[in-house]
Image 1: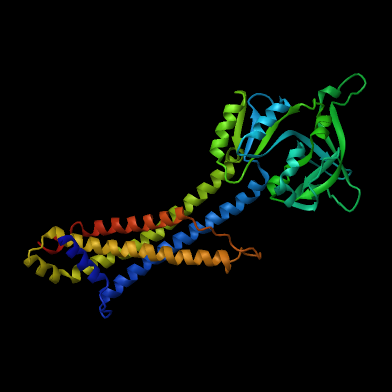
Image 2 (image 1 turned 180 degrees about the vertical axis):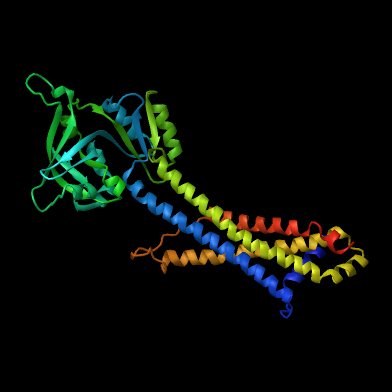
Length: 400
């Protein structure tokens, strides 16, 4: 019962209607600072979540969810039934065989080094790659057709309106003989289309058919570099990964999308954490205002506390009053800040008013429950800790 009385006093101190005293104004200012810090932290975390999703959009459109590769060597031999077993798993939306080799692409003017991916007919069902087409279509089923990235096409000065072909060359010791002194194997490819995604990817990869690349590097048609797997919507990637590990022999590795791009995911997570730490400084500044507000309130209410002491209240109760006051400011400020920040994020997502500088692209934002929880707990706990630190020696300062 006495605890409810303590909370009632703290609530009365905070919601006092009088605005004439400087103490009430300082209390309001401390509350506003808590709201602003919570709002700022939520908006920034939502913006970085949006940037993370936007950055991963291109990678997710290009990379498979899982890539099965041999533990030893570049190539492996896989029988048809094995691929059918992988495709028959409940979570598998698409499974395709891939052959990869680093080649030198050249024309009469320029040359560049890329990774050429030979893909089977299942790979053409990946609609995301076709959606990335800048010119032409993703259809390289005809022999000796190639699908280039925009950066590679620019390096080679490709003009699709003309009959344009490029020469792919790879080292091949199989070609070295008494009748052929060249240790290289070469093949001409007709350019079927150009895709555009991000500079790092489009400057690294080009696509052709499995048969074309097998002919170029002189390997049997049953040799492959990897199996690329797309997970169906609504299926668990963790469950499918476990099923793949159980199905495939021990001499295969199942690599996830995150493991294919460890540097990218690590960079995005590190940036998010760094921004969180930086904006925690804003919260600390707001908390200093709360410390000052509680301290001044304690000085002003010294006479009230002595009256309560005469009525039987103990010294520990006085600390609880101002600790409750700090808790009210922290919790309500965090809650209001989260609501205001959520409104900003929702408006930016539906009717953008902030754009990436120099472009017409809206600044991406994503509102997540995780960010809401992080902001609310961070601001509330900082405020609670500051209130406890301020009130712990109240009895020694004012009532001895």
